[in-house]
Length: 382
Ligand SMILES: Cc1cc2nc3c(=O)[nH]c(=O)nc-3n(C[C@H](O)[C@H](O)[C@H](O)COP(=O)(O)OP(=O)(O)OC[C@H]3O[C@@H](n4cnc5c(N)ncnc54)[C@H](O)[C@@H]3O)c2cc1C
Image (cartoon, rainbow, N blue to C red; front, side, top):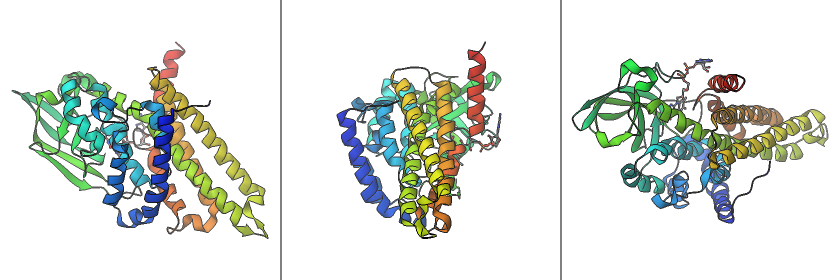
């Protein structure tokens, strides 16, 4: 399937590509070594409007719909995945809750600053005992007058150390299971809120995930996001909304790996010929290209369905699964095409290989996506 984007988005896409190629790529090794994204890069991303990717124009965002978002995410995916994750965490899951479920007061209060990147967003669902089974939350929220008092601990929360605004899921009625969970907008400045230990990870340098700890954390009643008892559904909606975007970022990374592998295979000579002339190498490149084209078509099909207002529970899970698996397959082949240099940290391939691995785990593991797809199929074949 082909897709078209407006001229405006083509212009934005070109601007993002130039920024990624000229600025982010220039500091990719630095990010990797220092585990820090230079302030200059973050400021430039703000100027380009990248923090407002998911936010409607009326609140200061780009207002470009899912196809437009995917077109830009594809460019953002083609560089250091720590940077990609900073933007993806904020725009994919960190601000979408307020866009989708927020009331007018909440949108006016939070979105303009989130659109400019003045305030960074994060999404806080996971707890030590509640990973794939996200209904098993222990964080509680008890109403006291005009406040809710939150107590509990979340872990692995992307962007937590930089974030100002968190979408937090907590149990308001333990007797109701998933229907007893409510979502809240929690500011880092609220009394009783604290960011805990930063995790040491396999990759995604420059992107930081940490615990958040709420001890008698006071959240005003007006910060309930959506209806009480709808927090789990809200979390699933936010995650489903993010899945086409994550696939587009994976697509960008996979395409970058193919580009690097093609260049290398044409240059590198073994047995007196460029290695692309060895059929085994050429076949790996062909397989990478097929996977990438299939991912591109599928990503924009799902994005188009989202823009058309169609229900995409099954397709969102499929694209999350397929995008992650394609990125991992392509990264593995890219290392193989590069031989030894693919394993050496002075070159970008091994970084992408490590960074690809998380995509099969976060925002719902590959196994959980298969469970969602199978459950939907089961309903369809009833
Ligand atoms: C770097 C990073 C960033 C993250 N960012 C965020 C964030 O911003 N916000 C947030 O809320 N969370 C975040 N997470 C958490 C992430 O979403 C969870 O790690 C993920 O959902 C898996 O949960 P778990 O780690 O507890 O693994 P578990 O749920 O314990 O799973 C372990 C294994 O068992 C399998 N498994 C479990 N249940 C089933 C089942 N029913 N059927 C088949 N297989 C099953 C899993 O697929 C997996 O292979 C992040 C995690 C990491 C590592």
